[in-house]
Length: 437
Ligand code: GDP
Ligand code: GDP
Image (tube, rainbow, N blue to C red; front, side):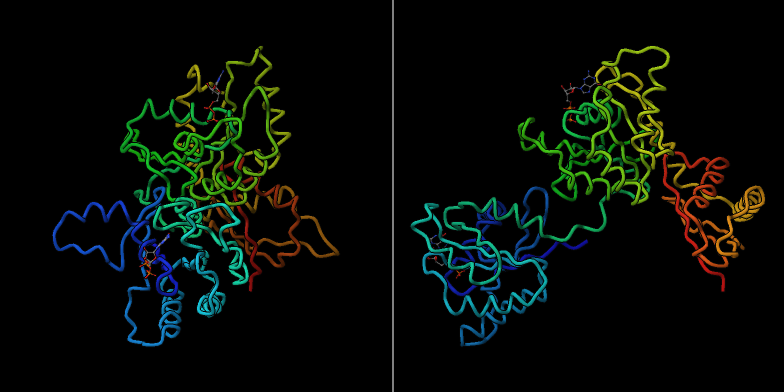
């Protein structure tokens, strides 16, 4: 995956090369001592919060045009064509100019992300600066920075990296099992991650994930590769105060997107939260394997009925997850901790299982004979043929006389029949209906 390209666009003297040098600063400093390495490279690799990108200063490109407006119009067009994100730089000291307006006109026509950056704002006292004029450009809030002094450029970069395209592949070997650890603050995510990693061979120390929403830690166990995607890890790195940390749904959803298995942590002393339901609902729809992990089991007063009581409650609150195993653990005392990775392996195996076509068709035939599909307006669903179209999640294709005749409850019945024979514990399964020609 090539690095995303970020172009700096703007008329001469607004501070493009100053900003360019500011952003790639660390690297420039490294090469500066070497004779013959010029400071003014037009393309430089930069990195912020673990996201890498290539920065281009379009002002340094020579278009052999002598009219300035034509020059920077070309810059803008090139940026639109080549870049993944554009920093449009204006000069807050000089204020809005007609050239800025021209460039903005070009940039407004792209659907690439554009950040409007008002440079030379050394004083954040608003009475002294005129960057509010720049709202007229119709490119959103101007971000005040001082490239020369490095003021607010961190915030600019924070915003920039959220706009960069997500790398579509992660750097792990293809058979790697990716585990997302999800749950509201204080449920014990960090404790669980640390406990698991404490026991396993960590391959490299934690690296920021492909987004800055999570920390990925690859490790190896029994010859298999895993990655833990830890949404709490970011908090540790950035020292965000515990009480002020919100349950970031976005962060959780991104981790779910990248995982094979979602570990949904639930505080046994508190039960399932609303946000938990949303996130596992999303994981379910995305076809991810899901394990429910009731943590802080050490704090629960128990008798021989306690586990059943908890199980009933979880099933009631998360009825669509009837296939998910539930573990009762303590990240603190280590109770049943080894079960966690055993269960991860098990559900991945389940999600990857293939049912031979002949067996599947026998099963469907027997199921429809035992309980025929209900008739609807004198017409009855006929299933001619079934085949498994894919894994992770297991996906079945049913060739039928008319897909409209399939009822939700009958599909549920078929799913239950398939599950009672083949298990598929911990993974959603899908049915697709095709009209037979
Ligand atoms: P470019 O030609 O558009 O790339 O602009 P430069 O980066 O060469 O800067 C043009 C002038 O503006 C130079 O004299 C810089 O020192 C000055 N400049 C750049 N950034 C700032 C800033 O943040 N504050 C102030 N006060 N001056 C700046
Ligand atoms: P996170 O916000 O989800 O990462 O939660 P932490 O791992 O930081 O844990 C929050 C608090 O709960 C800490 O004080 C932990 O020591 C405590 N904790 C985590 N797991 C358990 C557990 O299994 N039992 C008990 N009693 N406390 C736990």
